[in-house]
Image 1: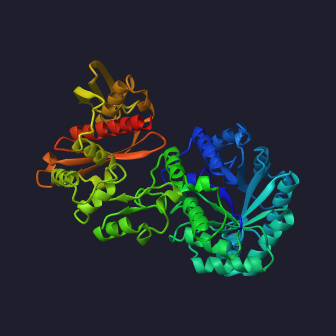
Image 2: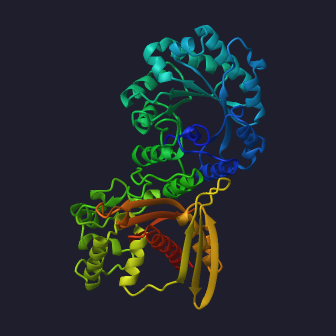
Image 3: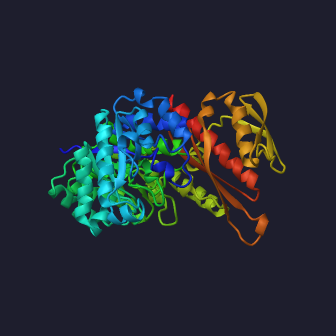
Length: 524
């Protein structure tokens, strides 16, 4: 089985994506996560790009890694400057990582128009820079920037750039689709041409501007690339990079390559959620393999088919990547979908079981009120327990009050919430200042309950959505609030419906807390 080598660039290329901002503490968490996954290289950033990244390398984070090699990223030397005198290369070597990634131009027009130098000088820059880093004992990975575009314009020169890097001592030659505009068949043909030209140790680095980054990566591997670069979740500049989670699953489950251990493959969904938490983003529900909707079924025919033979509508078993099957509740599903969804809790339940029929009627009533359980699985789970007589409340909310005011310029504090909870007769009253009424209410509720349930200290809200259900009454309309919560390991969604947005938010927040407490109790 052919082994594929992986370099993750979430901390460098991924951090250039819109909305992604990583502290050095976040970077260290990502390092540990990627190392646990068993990836080969972690591209931690450019030590000369800003003081924060220089500080991160100064902390020598690579020393704590068990398997992965920390990698610093930087440019070849400047035109007209010997590699040994280039300040950027000096800083790259000073980062003291076992491997470095050097990028240089492989597109002739970029050499002339952007670098504004001669083709020969660019080759000198590539060769000397690689030689300097190799002489310093580094494993040199050369990123041939714009290689696919350069090859389509002037293939001889693009290959000369690879040759210069190899002559300098580069051990990996990475073909980059920097603009993300190359299509899969072109990537396959060009990569094969580089292999036929005698270049070993080829890699691939694809961007997703045509939506083909994963497909392009697979084609490059089919053509002979054995080193793959990308980011977890596909985050990155513009439209993002190749999603390594999808690439790993595709290569290992579909194409027979060796990428990660079976244990890592079976936890891909967990790693997706953990990476999203660190990057302060979310896993898109439709993300292949690891999204919440990746194995979700809604149509009645599909649900019936999956119940009889999962392979009818699932290309791999959900558990092979640590995900789970889900049957969505809708007018297209009904009692069959509900019975299938309940089998994990009640194996003996049938489509025509009295409990199932009663729950269907309850769901229809709630849906008339404005609930939608398709995106609020935790609220659905609580409703099931209530309908089946298995619900035991963990607390009672005796009182709450929220006061809003204009935001304070220095802190953005704009609301104060007070709550009084009752846990088995013990009372707790707390207040909390927040950035808005929902944030204040969330903080006050959890602050009060953490006294009784310390496990809630890890829980926080990561997404908040409001949907107006009736347009006629305008500001008096009913609203549906859906929130997503996490404890750093799992993510769950809850919902509330009311004509009062604070009341609806409180319903969703209360369900989120109750769901976490039920899960913690069942784990014990």
